[in-house]
Image (cartoon, helix red, strand yellow):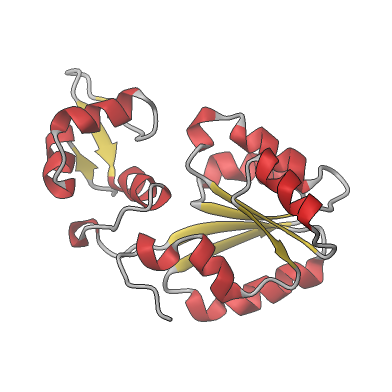
Length: 194
């Protein structure tokens, strides 16, 4: 079962004022629930997700963690290549793939990934629209969006940024570049290797 934390537990753990934790909860950027007695509690997984999304190191007390990444591409060979490439990072990355932009919108709410890699050219819904729809949802504002395309250009990169992505990468995507963009070393409290 996931550990539950009070606002005071979190304040001690992160060395911030309890009112700061309360503000994060009130703004909806740190997920919490109320007990029947009216006290706020935060699940350990939600606290980990919050810290990763906001590029804060994970305290040891939160245990080992993995960064959840959702890859969206309509081409099976690309998804297969991504699964192979991430196999050596299985200890720190939990990878999920889908071939549909529509399915990605359903999965993102269910999985609450830290980041998504989204192909721009898909038949059911293009990557720009996937980004725009995710950015329109307040609970998903911490999800880091990165697009990819086989026809990379400055115009497509600019369109991606306007749609809410933090970067647009040319295919084939290099896993190390992706890990840095998703801030995996920082999220797991490790120094990035040069």
